[in-house]
Amino acid sequence: MLIAFEGIDGTGKTSQLQYLANYLRRKGKEVVETREPTDGPYGQKIRALYTSRHTVTMEEELDLFIADRRQHVAECIQPALDKGCVVLTDRYYYSTAAYQGALGADPKSIFQRNAFAPRPDLVLLLTMGVDVSLRRIQEQRQEQLNDFEQAAQLEQVAALFASFDDPAIVRIEAGGAFAEVQQKIRETVDRVCAQKLQS
Image (tube, rainbow, N blue to C red; front, side):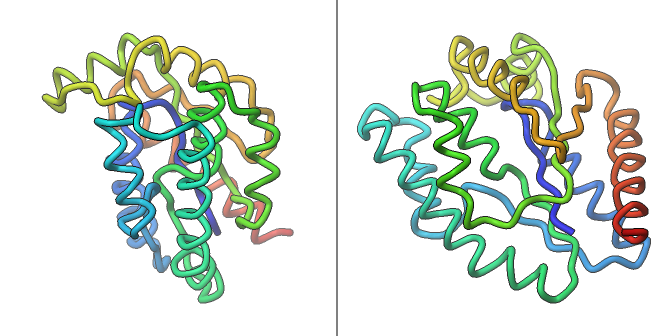
């Protein structure tokens, strides 16, 4: 199974993914945790843009995300799926469609350019208000907002996430208590796993 965690910054994707991974391992699943951007050469270039996004064009930025994902699929995601693992990825091509779409790129075109990537069995789209997410980043994580985390941009990103109608997407309100959100995630994953076994 391939499960993608998506949502704007500050929704708790990384922590929720780690707790889900531990839950699935306790159930006997072999789990691979991964993320995008990756730690590979293209991913490192993307991470450098967190404080210098103005140095590349929209198309150059998009090309970096596509190249990073091609390598990610070839070297991590597909081999793990071929072994029968459950792959949990912190961001996937839905984030590219939302974040680069907010810059003016066409989300439909971005989805088409990502046709090489395996389709997720489940997309856990964590939702919350932009004001709440920014407060979490600044107060809980004690971090300065990077170039991808500005309020006006995140409002556009959230609107694009809300517009996606992929049947794999399950929206989960992430503003509540961590344990309650995790419980909703586990129930959703268990249901999708059961459906996959029956099909």
